[in-house]
Length: 281
Ligand SMILES: [Zn+2]
Ligand SMILES: [Zn+2]
Image (cartoon, rainbow, N blue to C red; front, top):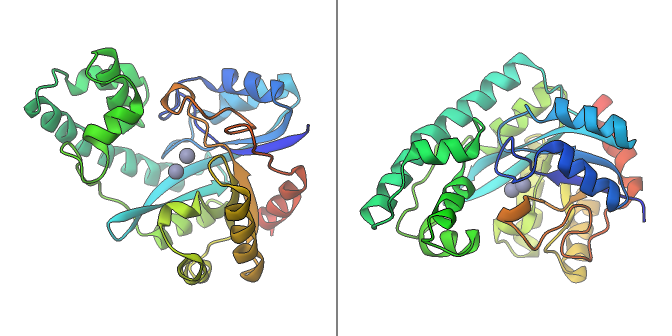
């Protein structure tokens, strides 16, 4: 069935497959248009555009930026942005620098906990400038300290666990302004991560809309039908665009597949044109 997937990660951030391989999986899954949304980096987009032309899949330039939300994070997706915009890329480079300040501190904590690894090993495995905790998790897996990325997060890397170190993050309004300045549409990723009830999420999204939010990721791999319906209701009441995607990462999230998520995901093709129109408005 024809479908979209507007949330995908590649080896340019913490995904385990390069863009061309993600595109091949998308083609198999019936995806007609997709967005590469690597964390804090746009270098995967040219490779995706080239592979997309071969498969006849439209590539929407995208990015995912983490922002501060109290002790928690809000992730802001940007769509149809000018991915070559120098100001945007300078800001993303600043975010990657903050990762390079944080990651060695995480590695130091892991070493103190008895895990023998170095940040050079993590950077080598990552092979990109956008280095994150999933790369650290993979080194821990390869060295046999954990059996899965999930175990690495549950035991060491997640917030509140012994190797957790907070990162300097922009405010949501800042991240959205950067995306708007690059002619993109800011969209709240996986809204349930904000851990709000319906009323709280409605209030939060209303505030974000006043600060520049254009849409909400209603369709997502882990949403059940009830949650999808509730989010759709909030998006409709706030006149936010509706988007969706798998948040595919490859082996870091092995139960999530391109296009179909855990099997039940379908992001309707009709959602694309309103998003495109909003970007060119
Ligand atoms: Zn995210
Ligand atoms: Zn993501």
